[in-house]
Structures are given as structure tokens and as C-alpha cells.
Length: 72
Length: 209
Image (cartoon, rainbow over all chains, first blue to last red):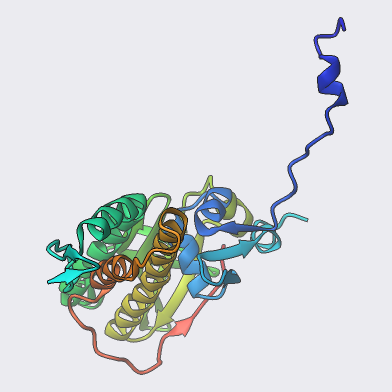
């Protein structure tokens, strides 16, 4: 092919990354642009809802992060 | 003393038990994976301990010192004189503040974020966290709340350690390794100077400006 894309690449099924539904505190901190201790503070004050994977770390839903960022 | 035929001769910080060679190697590997977070936890815990140690200086700075504010911040629709910063982590600081309302001193904790952060752009850089007419009560409540926040952080570090153990040592009894990491985190977040319980006179706020 002359457009630089191989035929096998075109035949490969597209693997789009599925959207994440939840993020760890560190990931949420990166999205919010603050230190993760500040995110733990928001969770502690119940300004940001988080749930704990059993057993595991605190997770914050994508919708919660978007709510704080006022993203539609 | 031996466990599973292995001598238990290794000690690790803040854990009273002794670990076998295999457990000690696992501990070093697991703790190494969470060490960055543990250091951050230690930094915040030390900063809080510093405020606890200088409790009366912080109270005096707000109640006795002359009325000269080095800085003024606006939060919840009011201007607050900054008395002292209480806690600072990258892009976020907690400020010990006061203002006068109808002749009476009102004390507040204001959180100030990096104004360029997405959260600050959406919600405002300054947020009034709590207020009180009584400075010692407010400071104690602040410290207690920060300790609780540290607890959440420590629980996540412990959860990460458990995940690492499950991944790297499936089916092996690494209970003492997990307990040793837990003990180290628990020690780090324990208040070095206990603050007395307070009556709930602090108002919790939540408005960003």
C-alpha cells in the first residue's frame, strides 16, 4: 500500500481503550491537579465520594471527578 | 525460634515480631513498592506533629499577636487575615486565618490550591474549611481531621502492600509481612502529642470562591 499503512494493520480489529469508570486517589489527584493528600481530604470531608474495592484501595468514579471539575 | 524450619531472626521497624529470611526478603520488596507513599505520609505526619508541638504558639499567634496580617485571602465571600500556614503539600496549603465579625474574632481554616489546577479553576482556589469563635477548639478539630485523613492515606498504603503480597507471593503465608507494614504505617500516623477531645463548636464550611 502506498499510504504507509500496512494491509495487516487495516485488517486488525480496532482496539479502542475502554473508558475507565473509576480511578485511584493518585490518578484522581493528577486529573484534579492537586496533591493526593488534598484528595484524601476531600474524601474525608465527604466532598468527594469514594468507595474501597474489597480488599483494596479507595476508588473514585469518573462521574465524581467530573462533577468536581464541573464537566458536563 | 524457628518457623517452617527457618530461623526467625530479622527485625523491622515498629514491628515486635521477628521475620524469617523469606519473610524479610518479601518485606523489603513490598515495603520498597510503597516506600514513596510512606515517605509522603511521613512528611505530612511530621508537619502535623510540628503544629501539635507548637500548639500554643499557633493559638497565640491568632489571639495575642498584633493585628497585622501578612496576607489576606478571600473565602466564602469574606476576607480572612492569614495568621500562619499550617500545612503545605505540593499545590495545596492549609492556612490558619482570622477575621473580625461585629467586633468578635472569628477563626478559620482556609485551603488554598494552586490557582492553575483544574480543581481550582472549577471550584475556586480558596475554600473555607472550618470556622470557630474559639481558636484552640478550631486548631484541635483541624488536627483531628487531618489525622483522620492520614488514616485514609495509610489504609491505601496498606491495601497496596496487600495487593503486592498477593501478586508476588500467591499461596504463601505472608501475614507477618503485611502486619509489619501495617505496624509501620500505624506508628507513623499515631499522634505524637495527643490533643484533647473537643466540644463540637467548630462550623464545617464548604464553599470555594
